[in-house]
Length: 260
Image 1 (cartoon, rainbow, N blue to C red):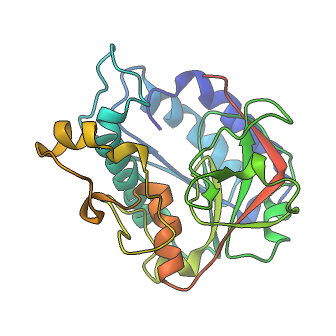
Image 2: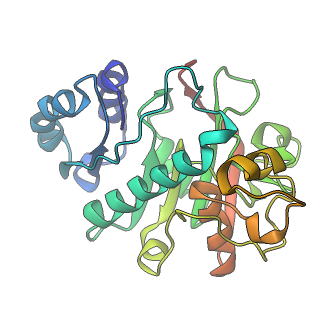
């Protein structure tokens, strides 16, 4: 979590509304590089979270990565660095938080609504890696564009006619359920471009077009597969594929993300 003060109270309220047995839920929280007091805000909630759930722990890890105010966080020029740090953060939290749990449910702090039985709905698929459809308004386009198939051309909102459970190749992290033993076997969030030989990756990954190669790598010429691959959550999806696991999405199970 980073600069998440305005979201955290709602985050806790949504956790408290979960109707999965709370004595079976452990919560791991990581904060880094905030300037709005997020760490202190989270710490005030820890006693209540530890009372309600199996346990709740908080860690801090700063990477000194601050996006300049004149640059949007989606700007292609910063995506390699930004996504690499997100991956490092997720991996660090996983190494600290995972103990004897059976599943890991990744949840972003800026979700604003999801059903109280979301855990049961995800587990009911009996899939080892599964992803609901994160939207900004019900019935709208997918917000989490990192969940895709067909080399990034189709997202969960495009797949509703396909069924209630569809195979995907890239995954996002707004909400993602992963069987814990797959993490224990080595499934992580790649901090670098991963899977350049995998046929499922995008051939026209917007992060790595020629103009960005000039800026990031100081080279020119035609893009080759050396500079292709997927990173962070999408990289996890490709890594899972190479480990022999499948990723699945639920186009009709919509959860709401903040408009910001």
